[in-house]
Length: 447
Image (cartoon, rainbow, N blue to C red; front, side, top):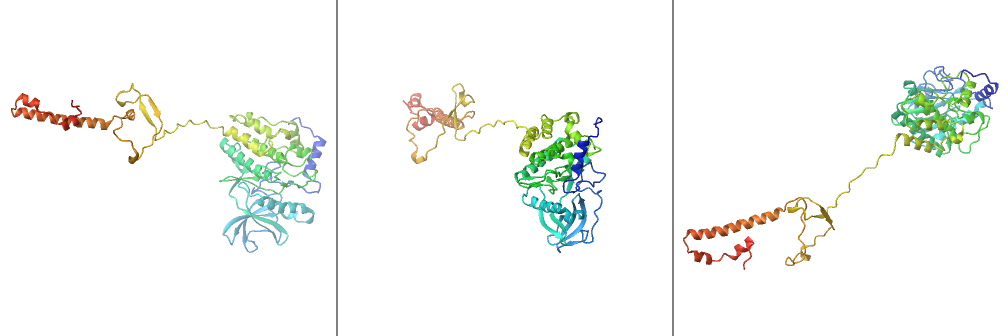
């Protein structure tokens, strides 16, 4: 940027960007502690608003239901107060339009302020604040009531940690793209996406400040340029084209670059609007790989693609950009090999090479269904094949029967020895037959 020289054409365009066709100054009064061309939504160093006699002030009760407690934030167009709902016993936030914009010459600013509340209320979502009510203070100062958020803006988080860790970066980036995809699906273009308008809570992310949002079918003058220049798409500065979803994606890509690099893509703080415009149009941003180590593969390409000065090279939608981001940080998990569960009714027969029912090669047979006792085949019918035993288990019942048979055979033999003790003749002992029931129990066939 040392070779920059004052270009009358660029300086003239920069002057037109500061003042639109209706003579409305935009972003001209900013605190010195903020980054150039960026206003903190909840910056306590913002100069206090001059409260009119009937203006908002702590202690004032609105419509007998809400008492103002303290001021918690201020911006170019509005000031936010913390209030307590006297009927529901809850803490809320109320945004008032600043007094410099209350005259008839700024009717368009007043219309946009009212439009902000209606745009948010008609597309509720997890990444947008909830709108409770809308009204005017003493019939002159418009306001709307919304939920009170607890947390910090993304700009404040960047002051604490200029380079976010990769897990936190992925959470913030994915939620931001989800919020943009949600409003784009409802036909709304934010046109002022920047870290000061992104609020981080313990449960997620909220997209704030829809005062410059454009709805589907709304006509905007080509000479009216609204937004924050550091995050504004180049085609809106030069060509004067109407904002579209790709303009918001450019702003989101600039934010992603800043989250990773720890600084904006075009240097720290350009000394003039013309110098900033010259950097955006003629100097490519510093590659992310030189500012952040160990970048996930494909992340640098995705961010630079979203920051392309040619809108045709950017992603087509926030959903597409989110899908590419998830592919980088959430690769497809490997397929798990699950062992099929063995059916309870399947039986197996051991191979002949496995004696005594030991574990061997098994052959599964078709599941059989046990018939009731009344329908079973008679036991006298010869079985074609012995019933297979479970592999690896000894037939306990067979051994028990064999032991019983041996015991009964032993009892029969003992009876014979008793006869010898009684000195009976040998011929009579041999001629005496063994009882048939003993032979049958012992398993000896009788001729």
